[in-house]
Length: 83
Image 1 (cartoon, rainbow, N blue to C red):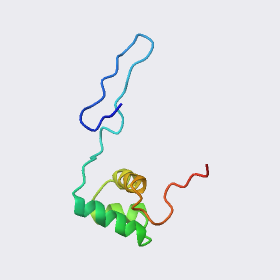
Image 2 (cartoon, one colour):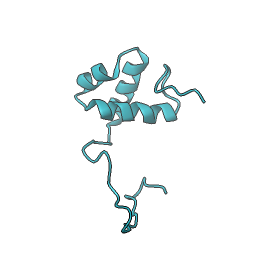
Image 3 (cartoon, one colour):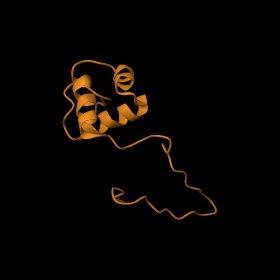
Image 4 (cartoon, rainbow, N blue to C red):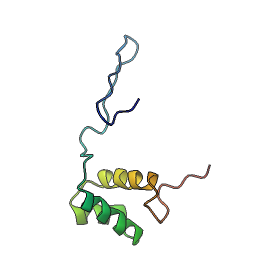
């Protein structure tokens, strides 16, 4: 389901309840901040330092880097998986 334009609507059943996850995180980044986070990561800084520098939650920075990695903008290894 594409959730870019709306939140997913899942049916609840008696057997299973649904839970929204990461609802305490901010998923929006100013484009310049997203670029700065990516540049800092590519320059060798760690997630915690980048988070502190940008006054963001480290989990938000991790997710921003994941987003950028999927777009091919991350130049150094990030969340490497051998497939």
